[in-house]
Amino acid sequence: MMEIQSFDGVGLLRELLPILLAALAALVAAKLFVAPRKADQAHRAPRQAIQTDLKLAGPDVPTLTFFGDQLKRFEDEVRRIYAVNHDKPPFGRGMKNLNGPVPPCDVKESIRQMRAACADLQEPVTGGWRLHEPLDDIFYTRFLTAVDFHQARALQLIRNYVKFRREMRGGTPPDYSWLKAGLGIVPFEDVMGRPIIVARAKYFDSQISAETFRSFYRGMVDSIIAHLLMKRRPQLSDTNPFEQYVLVLDVLGATRRNFSMTAIQVMIHESNNYYPDRVAQIFVLGVNLAVRSLWSLVSPMVMPRTRKKTELIKEADVPNLMRQLVGHEKLPEEYGGSAPRLPSPAQAKTLSDMAGPIPADIWEKLGAVRMLEEKTAMASKICVAWDMPPYGFRQMSSFKLWLHSRGESTAITRTITDCADFLTDLQQSADLKKLNLDLPKRDEGYSPSGWLSTCCSIRPLTDEEWKARQATRQPEVFARSLGKILAESQGAASRAVLDFVSGSGPYGIPRRLD
Ligand SMILES: *[C@@H]1O[C@H](CO)[C@@H](O)[C@H](O)[C@H]1NC(C)=O
Image (cartoon, rainbow, N blue to C red; front, side, top):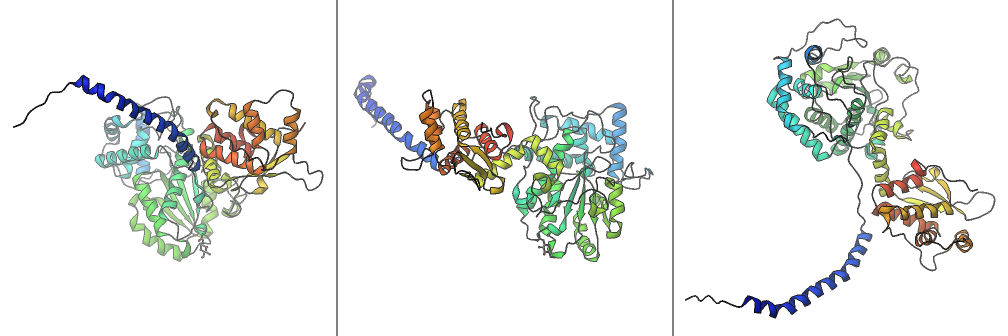
């Protein structure tokens, strides 16, 4: 038989209370005791917090929805592009012979249906930067043409695309793994205002990993998308209505050993899924028999319209084509123009050399250059040494600072006083109150000038100033302090350190000695 015992709750509580209180006190004590140790661990394994968002569209980018006459004009362009007809001035002669595929349905009606079907996918307009291009008539139609106006398939692709952008938190930022290889460069737009990716096959490594090539492809096309969005006007563009780019694949000087099936497969997969109908035309320059046989291998894998977009150009015909496409003045010498040659990967020093001025410029505007530098600085390190002039006094009054990744030849010189002032500024900025500078041990060297200025200062030093002076007593100590700030702080402080070391931004100009 079960007996339910009733008990006196209050009495029990009274009995338990002292035990509970003791336990609580122990917990608090443990917490107090443990907390500093946790913080200590955090020091040893610094967060690798790097901002990685690359928003593709500014708050002002116009959404293009067409009505009436504009919609009629847009429909004509859609028909031309769907037919893969490039005979439009100034690149073409405008012969108006449409002998390509014809949309199997009413284009205007298709667009209207997409507008309704995608209403729930729109990014909320918050006046901020956006993860991707606006979902508008141009956007819908690129997806529609790529799948022959098959509504359900286009919609599925669009849903996938929006999901992809949300997961990526925008676009793919540049990375030195492919920038250094010089796989592709966007030096200019063509006469139709379409950016040109020049890919030089002789720099291709047939062993390239799918991951690196994917990052390269996304990074380059995303920079082009952002560039085209930034220059977008509120009307339909006359020469580049689909906001497309042109691929120039230069196979001159390349051999079979530069051919990568992996790269081709990645490119086909990426363009079918995330970048449908972004490429307007593909020119393969310097085609010989070997290339023709490779093309016969690849062409069955690509969509019929992509096949139609591709032209194989013999070496002798390259200058004519390229002059027609770009114009004589912008065109580099090697393609028959009068502009300087494109830098080889070995010659490339700046981002503009590595990827071309169009991506370099847009990455600067989107903050991606900073991200790249932060990532590089984390991976490499900050170097500090005494600045010892080859002749003159060994004053030990200034440091040379540089990023290891960039090399000592890029070092800039700063006086120790400037370095100490910089640290003082950083500590005083609100978000960095708790900044722990790496202070030297008692016997870890000293700087005469630092010591002197400490003695000679008229007013007593603040706590921050004292720490800053200590942290700049030795190059090694200062380097550790900067490295620590870089590793432990995000945003403003890291940026300030990079500016200070690389001589750019607000800390760009080293203060004069006077
Ligand atoms: C391209 O192929 C040539 C051999 O034909 C080779 O010497 C070169 O290293 C290849 N390029 C790359 C980046 O692998």
